[in-house]
Length: 314
Image (cartoon, rainbow, N blue to C red; front, side, top):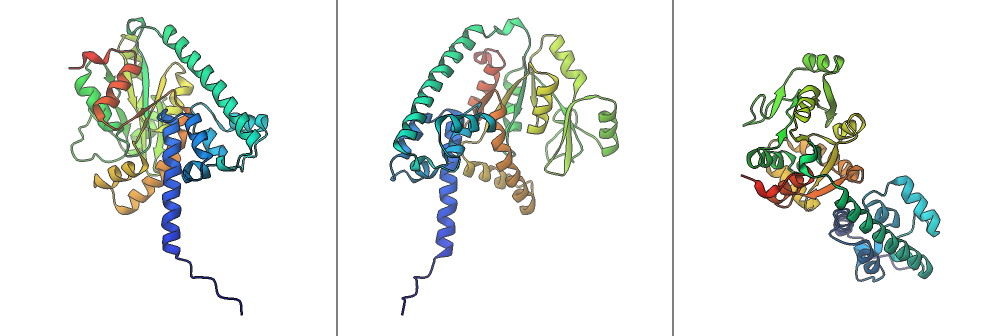
């Protein structure tokens, strides 16, 4: 008789699979924020003692690099003769060499471009800046924005309109304009919103356009704290706006922040976490990435991206 295979510990296997996905997600986040270089991850993937790097798909690896989208990723793979299904650990010797040469050349070009941008960047006195701050749910956009409001009075924070009910401590006209669906419909129909969107398949948010344009015309930098859908609309309507994506230090920390604030039911938390996974993939569309590990430092980086001197915080 053929001996029966040993029983499969499905719980342990499932737990290991989750840990592996989280490890790969952490690598992609580190690549996106620049905490790890592409060459570091590629070199680590050659060693089976680094299972997360070894098992990371080449496609996921490339798409984690800022400013590499789906089309560019496909072109790179075709150019290098690498299948989209390949994992970094499964690359042949020649494939690995070609990818390494491409990344070295790209890193050099990005470095030269960054230096040129630093030289060409206008001073704060050259004109006001419109910066859009967006990111996944529970990443702390509101906390960073409040810190900027309290410590950088030279920045104007735009106030959004929303159809959701106020949360504890939120003040009408300061945090949001709380409106009903009929009023929100009127704002949309009359073109009074710079952007608007439905978030989490529930409530609508929008930015009144007139106050933003008035502040910019008066020479005041404006910060918009909005969702990712809204950021895309602002890019279309105001191409000069700078889009900043706020990242969590890690996925586990994002989960902790969402479940720890106690403002949503378990069902709502699950829905928001599912949305957050999709939202994190949008970071490639943004001009700059800021990790919200420490609120004051994240706020300082956002203000600096507005062309202001963060040393002058009160």
